[in-house]
Image 1 (cartoon, rainbow, N blue to C red):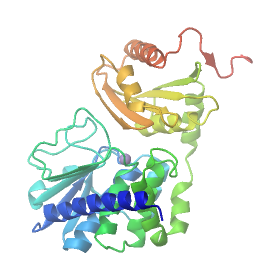
Image 2 (image 1 turned 180 degrees about the horizontal axis):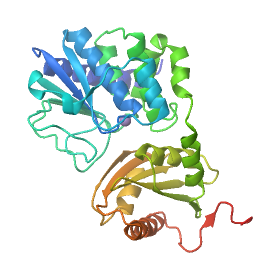
Image 3 (image 1 turned 45 degrees about the vertical axis):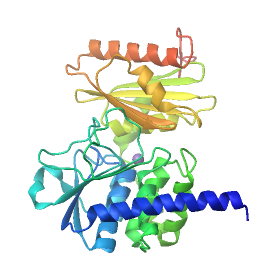
Image 4 (image 1 turned 90 degrees about the vertical axis):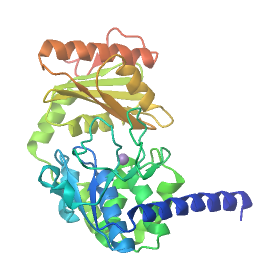
Length: 356
Ligand SMILES: [Mn+2]
């Protein structure tokens, strides 16, 4: 056995154990926990939320509620909620006074896509994002690990170190959260993610996991995808796609993921207008810094952005959604992103050019 690895492993688990004990201490003596996450919850946030509920219940006997804002949009995410019977409440229907403690997972107080109701004091924050807007002052327990590929991995680590055997549904939710945020353990992956996955895997319902990963999709999905692909602009190693008006921020992220698979692509920048907000998703090849790229792109724009490793996202409030204002914004973003990537502007290649 390699003695260096052993020492490092021990240090890492001592660190994890202290964190787990601090989480237990933060929850000790509480009666009811309110678990919150960002708007339009994604699999990692849902996995982390049900994992934290499992921790509160199995380690401390505390009942909890997961309250959400926005919508669960992607077909896979809807399948996750359905297949794993994830119970959620609408945040606007919750009486905050019924809870004596509250937690935020996969986001932090102050982040743009996160709503904390007035009178709700956050005591616990579990997250893995970098964001300049974080306002964690006064939060009793803050566990933000930027090297973690998924918040679900952080939560699974707490369950593992507390000696909890996770239920099949909870293990499957956490595993799916890790899978999506790390692109099947290929992106932004750390030892913590691998350890978490090993711990969860014997308890995962593989049948359900498959049902979640490839759900049926409505015809409208393919229509949107077709429109998105017709707007792709290819520069040297940089792929841009402005979806214009689109149905959901999730679609922007989904197109970004898909385009990142194109040969020769070093970075993808996708944007789309939903309501009066312009949503941005950035992907870079492994080792790239998506957060730097999105900050460069959004330089001088209002709004917020966050990210980790090769994945980042942001929101720009546009107010008036006139086509002219949208076009100008897209032009500014394009100029910034090309400059940041050191790529000359000019004529982009567009799909279908040769035949048109
Ligand atoms: Mn996440």
